[in-house]
Length: 173
Image 1 (cartoon, rainbow, N blue to C red):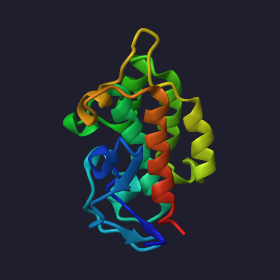
Image 2 (image 1 turned 135 degrees about the vertical axis):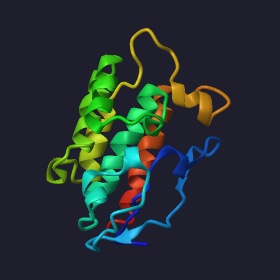
Image 3 (image 1 turned 30 degrees about the horizontal axis):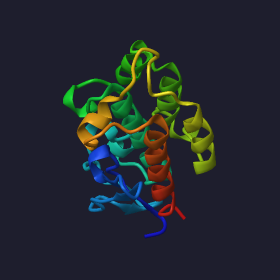
Image 4 (image 1 turned 90 degrees about the vertical axis):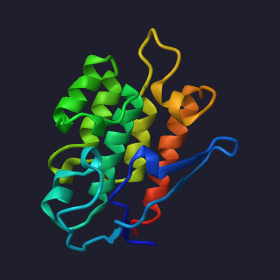
């Protein structure tokens, strides 16, 4: 499936095998070829980029936007779809809750101008390494409560995000 954009990246479409520390994506029904004109519908609202809603041409920027929403979901411990809030408001909530460096990463992923979002996997990896998804007083993260029966350490959470980014990258070229 090289040259495709997933268009519905979200945590529920990332399957984890904790014992093997491996991830798999599912739900490719909305995937389209890079460069194809997008239908105006499809995808999950909080994870869908503005250009995905407007029916523009498919690009990697669609999935990068969704990666930002996924990291916000992980940082906050709740699905952004539960509330009708804008991407800007979601990013503000992340910042208010003390995840300042995650806020910068999320903001870059979810920029309205898709030309200014991350443009490569290596660029995402560098910035992902800077993220601390824990506030100083916390020892666990909301996502671990609903994805795993036992808490994961910080490096494993980052590793799952990184594996997701690498996994989607293989479909881009």
